[in-house]
Length: 247
Ligand SMILES: [Zn+2]
Image 1 (cartoon, rainbow, N blue to C red):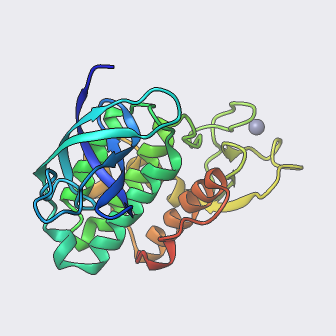
Image 2 (cartoon, rainbow, N blue to C red):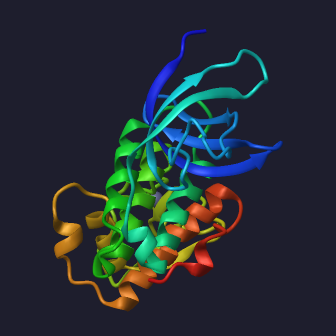
């Protein structure tokens, strides 16, 4: 099979045998792949710095037929995110992005938009005041890309436009907003403040509304809880990095 070249974000590495590494890479062109880097830990490794966790590298992959791991033949660093070295909160947010890419996407299922979103998010995680919003935006981008973006503007069951009020019913396991008629009998219904739903709409939209919007800490926490409930439902468990993420 011909070799494939792609940009890739290194989302996990595991040491194997004496000097080799198995890297999980979220590539721009091929989606998530697991590849064996032979000699990846040798002093004079052919992958100098190209397998650093949460770095973007230019990689060449030799696909293996059947069950075997793909073989990584080149990995050259392209971009590092210095904020992840300086700031522990930024680093945890970076780990969270890696966890979402690893656990929410399938192998060999490309999502170039999500790759680009991850790269931009990682680049800006050092800006503490907007970090929580950037992470929320990335979570929503993930959900959109895998086709599980919760419905916010209308009832997820009957399609009636959302009634404006103080709060609305929201089903993290059933697709989003629920109107009063559809709410009874739905599992795990949350009550979410109207302002939180509006904030999520801004966070999920292009343009600058997401960064210009006034948001109190309690509102960010509520947005985090709402999106986190959807992500936890999709994963089947709470994200592992969640306890370390500040709001
Ligand atoms: Zn309804």
